[in-house]
Length: 286
Picture (spheres, one colour):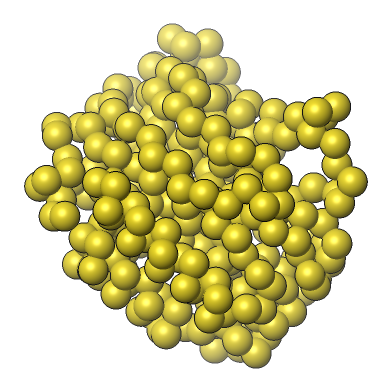
């Protein structure tokens, strides 16, 4: 479907692609991503969001040999799938840039063009020996709204300066590839996962009237510093005003596609007027 068929004003359908990621299994992972993209298009979605490092898995050591440039083979495969489905795609990929490797994300258009690339900034310390740190923030202006693509821990409550900055750049949608992992014996009934993300996303969604979506993979971490932990989905979409739009199921086997109706709110303020807007909402930060 073309974008004219899917978008009505500021309303459209977004797909959360909570896919399985196997460490180092590039071809299998890309096949799953292509399937998610095609399924989202078939269900009338205008954009699909996929997990962090979906090609190789977060912190998998195979990245040293198998990471590709962006643009490159892995991003080209996703771009072809985006063209075939006529859909925007947000996806986390492992990027090689010279002698450095980055935890990256891309926004690809329905024409297969890369509109935006982001390199993760707030990378966990245990991953610093593998990934270099990103050094820029930007947004893309699209018919769906203005989009930023921060990655996972870029949205920690302790690093919301990044989300604030993207909001000041005009972001109406923060679409975040993620890899949410817990200990192998984590009991979700006793300790429900997701409070950290709900808090951070709600803060930004309420202050800026924006939509924040985080999409995690599922499956076991087979190598790297968190080997033996499991990624458990629980993908989350928070809309303007802090309204919960969707929550993905929990579990290392909870793969699936979740379709979410999105209504993009116009930016309430720009430039120096943002400070007055935040103050009126009781925000006392910078």
